[in-house]
Image (cartoon, rainbow, N blue to C red; front, side, top):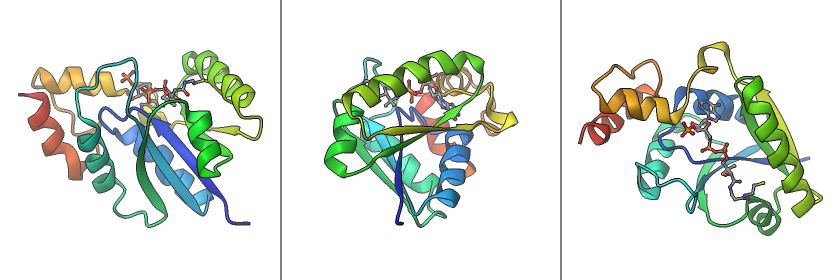
Length: 160
Ligand code: COA
């Protein structure tokens, strides 16, 4: 069976934690669609185009990964794209309740949709995009938090 899964998120910006989940998913499934949310309640620091470009560069070594953007409901996007499996990372117990609610809501909206959780690797359990944004904008070292190939671009945007 040819299996395509989706890894959705804001990716504002991509972190090594995201890349860990995407890389592991790419080893488990035939194709991984990384879907960047366009119209989130949050106002992103990086534009949709910037987030897509950073992700494209971060996953350049993973041939079965494709970056897309989407608007509206994830469940609807999956239905229209013929995708029935969401892959998300769980960093800590604190992620669980929210992720559990989203997984159930998505299944109510699209009963064919399953959500699979990968446990974040131990180096990423504390990591988030907002932490990267805060440390980077204050001149701190984010080299252990973001993919090396996009580090300089993230730093230069955050320090503006
Ligand atoms: N490593 C590092 N950080 C991670 C991570 C990982 N493995 N997984 C999540 N994060 C962080 C993100 O960096 C982000 O950090 P921030 O809040 O500091 O910026 C935070 O966790 C939340 O992730 P984010 O991608 O912003 O949102 P989400 O996981 O809550 O969900 C969507 C994003 C796109 C899946 C969700 O909003 C969605 O489906 N939206 C579409 C509308 C919809 O369908 N709504 C109904 C859903 S039931």
